[in-house]
Image (cartoon, rainbow, N blue to C red; front, side, top):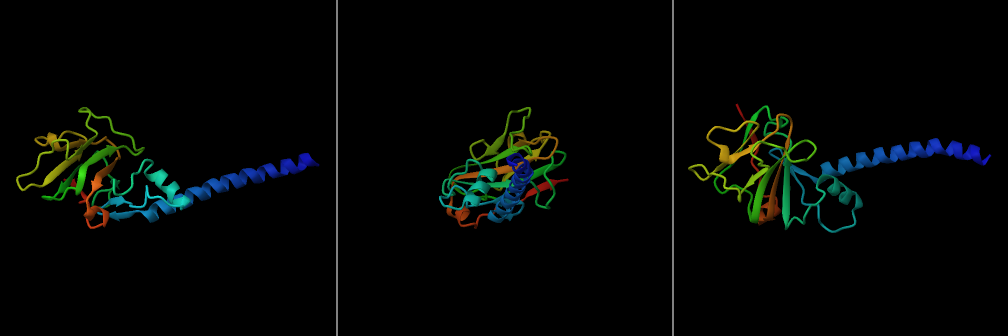
Length: 196
């Protein structure tokens, strides 16, 4: 009799476990999308790293940004699409153009990192995985900065080249000790533009 009860319970436990995992995945996905703000193809959140009791938010932050700082220490933007909403792919050439004085305001540094769809750094022939205000980017005559994002080196613009893989990729822009305009949401990262 006990054996029949146990045998009868096992399928229910298995189904319940599977439903719990599926439900948790759906809830986390909803929370990740709800906590993000997306402008110009760049998504960010100011909710990660902040103390609190919202366990679902903490789980979503761990999924999205496993080692997030408090927003006062670091703000992170991610882009998987260009300004037109098309998936970023190394078969295309892109420019991220910061107008004069338009790089992320900060009291430490900012960087733009290339990642593959699994969020790993992308191997490339010059071993460059990120560029930023500490990497010697060349400004244009008007003081603007154009970062060239593509698979092959852009002739004459190698200093500002962030190598991309041949396939899909995403970008992560980080600002450490961000300025007030970042923290209050006034600063907006320019869109990544495809170059014909």
